[in-house]
Length: 158
Image (cartoon, rainbow, N blue to C red):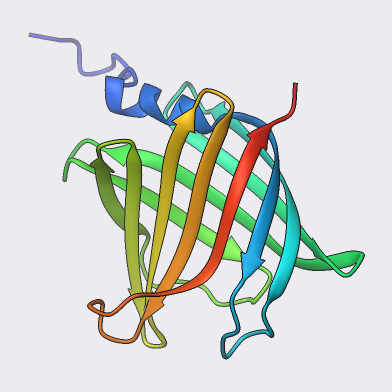
Protein backbone atom coordinates (compact mmCIF):
# COMPACT_ATOMS: atom_id res chain seq x y z
CA UNK A 1 0.00 0.00 0.00
CA UNK A 2 1.34 3.43 -0.97
CA UNK A 3 2.08 5.86 1.81
CA UNK A 4 -0.84 8.31 1.93
CA UNK A 5 1.62 11.15 2.57
CA UNK A 6 3.37 10.63 -0.78
CA UNK A 7 2.63 13.55 -3.03
CA UNK A 8 1.18 12.71 -6.44
CA UNK A 9 3.34 13.26 -9.48
CA UNK A 10 2.31 14.83 -12.77
CA UNK A 11 0.86 12.50 -15.37
CA UNK A 12 1.68 12.44 -19.08
CA UNK A 13 -1.48 14.53 -19.56
CA UNK A 14 0.05 17.28 -17.39
CA UNK A 15 3.36 17.09 -19.24
CA UNK A 16 1.57 17.47 -22.58
CA UNK A 17 0.70 21.09 -21.63
CA UNK A 18 4.42 21.99 -21.86
CA UNK A 19 3.99 22.39 -25.62
CA UNK A 20 2.51 25.86 -24.85
CA UNK A 21 5.24 26.91 -22.38
CA UNK A 22 7.52 29.72 -23.45
CA UNK A 23 7.35 33.27 -24.74
CA UNK A 24 5.27 33.95 -27.86
CA UNK A 25 4.31 36.79 -30.20
CA UNK A 26 0.85 36.56 -31.70
CA UNK A 27 -0.82 38.07 -34.73
CA UNK A 28 -4.54 38.21 -33.98
CA UNK A 29 -7.81 39.13 -35.60
CA UNK A 30 -10.52 40.37 -33.28
CA UNK A 31 -13.96 39.82 -34.76
CA UNK A 32 -16.70 42.37 -34.12
CA UNK A 33 -18.74 41.35 -31.09
CA UNK A 34 -20.86 42.82 -28.36
CA UNK A 35 -17.65 43.46 -26.43
CA UNK A 36 -15.52 45.25 -29.02
CA UNK A 37 -15.13 46.43 -32.60
CA UNK A 38 -13.19 44.11 -34.87
CA UNK A 39 -9.69 44.58 -36.20
CA UNK A 40 -6.11 43.32 -36.16
CA UNK A 41 -4.12 43.05 -32.95
CA UNK A 42 -0.83 41.73 -31.66
CA UNK A 43 -0.31 39.79 -28.49
CA UNK A 44 2.60 38.92 -26.22
CA UNK A 45 2.17 35.61 -24.36
CA UNK A 46 4.31 34.24 -21.54
CA UNK A 47 3.53 30.73 -20.28
CA UNK A 48 5.34 28.49 -17.83
CA UNK A 49 4.96 25.11 -16.21
CA UNK A 50 4.54 25.63 -12.46
CA UNK A 51 3.61 24.07 -9.13
CA UNK A 52 5.57 20.83 -9.48
CA UNK A 53 4.53 20.33 -13.09
CA UNK A 54 0.76 20.20 -12.55
CA UNK A 55 -0.12 23.57 -14.13
CA UNK A 56 0.60 25.73 -17.14
CA UNK A 57 0.23 29.39 -16.17
CA UNK A 58 -0.26 31.72 -19.13
CA UNK A 59 -0.38 35.52 -19.21
CA UNK A 60 -1.06 37.55 -22.33
CA UNK A 61 -1.34 41.21 -23.25
CA UNK A 62 -3.06 42.24 -26.47
CA UNK A 63 -2.24 45.53 -28.20
CA UNK A 64 -4.45 47.36 -30.69
CA UNK A 65 -3.72 50.77 -32.17
CA UNK A 66 -0.59 51.10 -30.03
CA UNK A 67 -2.22 50.53 -26.64
CA UNK A 68 -3.13 47.61 -24.40
CA UNK A 69 -6.63 46.47 -25.29
CA UNK A 70 -7.07 43.11 -23.56
CA UNK A 71 -5.17 40.99 -21.04
CA UNK A 72 -5.65 37.41 -19.85
CA UNK A 73 -4.46 35.07 -17.13
CA UNK A 74 -5.06 31.39 -17.76
CA UNK A 75 -4.31 28.41 -15.56
CA UNK A 76 -4.39 25.06 -17.37
CA UNK A 77 -4.26 21.64 -15.74
CA UNK A 78 -5.42 18.06 -16.11
CA UNK A 79 -8.02 16.86 -13.61
CA UNK A 80 -7.19 13.24 -12.94
CA UNK A 81 -10.53 12.68 -11.16
CA UNK A 82 -12.81 13.47 -14.11
CA UNK A 83 -10.10 12.82 -16.73
CA UNK A 84 -10.46 16.19 -18.43
CA UNK A 85 -8.30 19.23 -19.01
CA UNK A 86 -9.35 22.40 -17.17
CA UNK A 87 -8.78 26.07 -17.95
CA UNK A 88 -9.32 28.67 -15.24
CA UNK A 89 -9.63 31.89 -17.27
CA UNK A 90 -9.49 35.49 -16.09
CA UNK A 91 -9.43 38.52 -18.36
CA UNK A 92 -9.60 42.28 -18.40
CA UNK A 93 -13.33 42.24 -19.18
CA UNK A 94 -13.74 41.45 -15.48
CA UNK A 95 -16.19 38.56 -15.67
CA UNK A 96 -15.51 35.60 -13.40
CA UNK A 97 -16.61 32.25 -14.85
CA UNK A 98 -18.69 30.08 -12.50
CA UNK A 99 -16.51 27.07 -13.35
CA UNK A 100 -13.42 26.32 -15.42
CA UNK A 101 -13.53 25.43 -19.08
CA UNK A 102 -13.28 21.69 -19.56
CA UNK A 103 -12.27 19.46 -22.44
CA UNK A 104 -9.49 17.50 -24.05
CA UNK A 105 -7.30 16.86 -27.03
CA UNK A 106 -8.70 16.11 -30.49
CA UNK A 107 -5.67 15.32 -32.62
CA UNK A 108 -3.30 18.30 -32.29
CA UNK A 109 -5.97 20.60 -30.80
CA UNK A 110 -6.75 21.18 -27.14
CA UNK A 111 -10.44 22.17 -27.01
CA UNK A 112 -11.93 23.62 -23.82
CA UNK A 113 -15.52 24.84 -23.31
CA UNK A 114 -16.99 26.90 -20.48
CA UNK A 115 -20.44 28.24 -19.88
CA UNK A 116 -21.92 31.16 -17.98
CA UNK A 117 -25.15 33.10 -17.83
CA UNK A 118 -23.81 35.21 -20.75
CA UNK A 119 -23.33 32.19 -23.00
CA UNK A 120 -20.61 29.70 -23.84
CA UNK A 121 -16.97 30.13 -24.79
CA UNK A 122 -14.81 27.62 -26.61
CA UNK A 123 -11.01 27.90 -26.62
CA UNK A 124 -9.19 25.93 -29.32
CA UNK A 125 -5.38 25.67 -29.16
CA UNK A 126 -3.94 23.91 -32.22
CA UNK A 127 -0.28 22.86 -32.19
CA UNK A 128 1.25 23.50 -35.61
CA UNK A 129 4.86 22.64 -34.66
CA UNK A 130 7.33 23.24 -31.81
CA UNK A 131 7.44 26.96 -32.58
CA UNK A 132 3.89 27.78 -33.70
CA UNK A 133 0.34 27.33 -32.46
CA UNK A 134 -3.02 28.67 -33.55
CA UNK A 135 -5.69 29.75 -31.11
CA UNK A 136 -9.27 30.80 -31.45
CA UNK A 137 -11.89 31.83 -28.96
CA UNK A 138 -15.46 31.25 -30.02
CA UNK A 139 -18.80 32.26 -28.52
CA UNK A 140 -22.19 30.57 -28.63
CA UNK A 141 -25.40 31.35 -26.80
CA UNK A 142 -26.41 27.64 -26.91
CA UNK A 143 -23.09 25.72 -27.23
CA UNK A 144 -24.09 24.56 -30.72
CA UNK A 145 -23.53 27.33 -33.27
CA UNK A 146 -20.05 28.74 -32.64
CA UNK A 147 -18.84 32.13 -33.90
CA UNK A 148 -15.21 33.25 -33.76
CA UNK A 149 -14.48 36.14 -31.38
CA UNK A 150 -10.69 36.04 -31.72
CA UNK A 151 -8.25 34.09 -33.89
CA UNK A 152 -4.48 34.13 -33.73
CA UNK A 153 -1.20 32.62 -34.81
CA UNK A 154 1.51 32.54 -32.12
CA UNK A 155 5.21 32.12 -32.82
CA UNK A 156 7.83 31.25 -30.21
CA UNK A 157 10.34 33.97 -29.35
CA UNK A 158 13.85 32.47 -29.25
